[in-house]
Length: 336
Image (cartoon, rainbow, N blue to C red; front, top):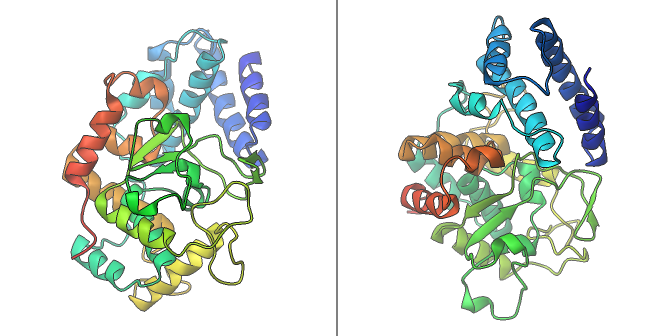
């Protein structure tokens, strides 16, 4: 394996990536390096055509989503090595952008129409549970990413809050209101904002997610009753039950979703994952409906955190404004 690949894997460890994640990258990058060796080149000297040839070579017998995942591993390797100055370019960037794999990797999942989901949300009365589920449905966040949100990761144009909370604080949020910040560098086992994290964010880049009027109302209703948190990180979502004031965990969120999904007839113990509604299902719902309403795969991929910096840079200099405009014009309503 090339020295640069070994360098990249070592740095992944320094950044807190799990042994399982590093092993997956090592396997794929090892296969990629071996393929290039057969072509008489190396990762440092590969070009776009080498990357295309490798993607073509791994399609046989593999699902499209698996091919896309493997390509993303190589893409992230090049993106990181370019950022640290070890390589000058990312030959996989355009290949990933041009790949025709669907961003929806759960095509067989249950389909719930928006009016039915609207009725589901209306029945959720508890401010915390409603805010958590509306956030998942309107942002496409993974459950771990939601749990990792701190008060400094959100800005709200809400004079009624007064001085009750110190929101924002991230440099990326300067001048941006009604916005969520999702940090790709927050991973399980690392201390972030003064608190050791038990969940990981799995994004390729910093993501700024717009907060529309419905989500803002759900969050304000929650903030009106939010208990004080002992954590110096000031989590956005904290428990109102046994672990009073402690950051909510993925398990807590899954339990809430399972309870409400069971009441709606959308969850049965032991049923296939494609039928049961879970927090991940809400990410599928967000992807499917927003993509259908916008027709803009780039915006949806950005909001999901599936697009790296170098690809975003190829779109437009005012990408953030474009995302907000498309999102607010297209996001579905969850209230009657």
